[in-house]
Length: 387
Image (cartoon, rainbow, N blue to C red; front, side, top):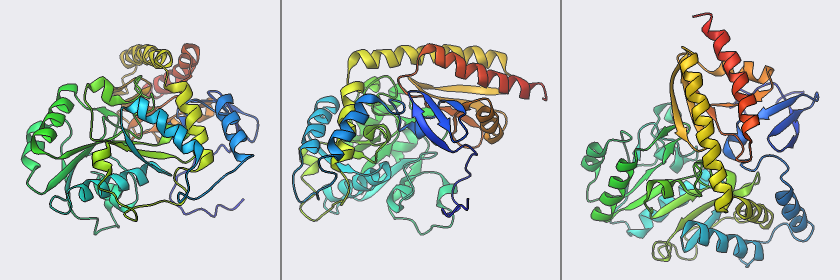
């Protein structure tokens, strides 16, 4: 079969045709433990019955109307988001990158052109559309696409002094990830993020938290900001929000949202009835303290097992993460490791060239964690023999 897609992905061999819980099945009938969640999207695993039921019921009635009209799934979804995020106003997009784009426009519009510069972090990742790409503090993603959107400055992550120095009278916002995902799974220090929040309030600028990967329960809290004991001006969500369907959200206050007037932004498909129905099912399940407590418990269990593995394997440089979002930094490139894991029936991710990233479905059980780590252990110890 000829691949007619743009040559932008280095794809792996399996063709997945079915999923069930934390398991994937390929076209040859082989079974794989999914420790990737489709890059954090399938937080409730595959074919979750509540998502299937909600989507089926909605698509049988009405798949789409434009945002020129109200629709009931949007109302229901946003009421739940308001309760869970403690925010008042929302924009629904199709993706995380679109949510980032909206936040850039919103931050600049809020200050009516008087402030327009945005500070981002080195090693960050916010998406590949032009505004999101410009906010991304990794040169490798910029190459060949300059000139980028002007007004972005990149400062070192977890360095409060350099951040303060970068702020000037034209700065309108700071955007950062509570845990840098694509950049290598680097968590923000708790005191650092509290200081950032304090500085933005003091300087009268907006704090945008990109929780596209860390939000919707991934860290064991509905939002990672809860762990950091802060409240950002704007929260960005996507990935897990749609339960496998395209859905992103910009979450903020009514005051900030009021900067956007009719015609200042829009979307044809964002907030689609079917995607919102899937999102309602996701929030029904994950927006529950008992469920989130279980994620924290499983995250602690996974952390303990990873630390044991670090003591066993000389290939491991560092273990970083929180909840069910972990990075295993290795002394070697991870592409071959991922290939070998697939051969052993495990699907994982990379974060850069030498970090093995684990984003299992939040419904994973300890026995399945043990199984996945046993395969990772086999691959790493075998590689260690060749050092």
